[in-house]
Length: 59
Image 1 (cartoon, helix red, strand yellow):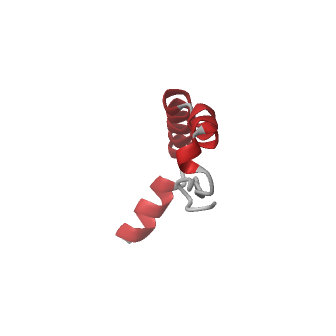
Image 2 (cartoon, rainbow, N blue to C red):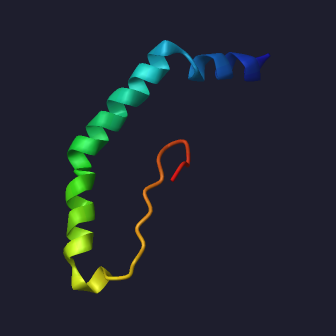
């Protein structure tokens, strides 16, 4: 029963909204576009593969 309750909590609209807000905040604070552009521009990272993995572990 406890497992069902925690799954229901994790899939609640409140939790989904909280995750979306956190994602937006991290994108603003980390500025992933600037990070990726800096990596692309650096001669030290030529040929390096950078993989961004989100909270669902998708590439």
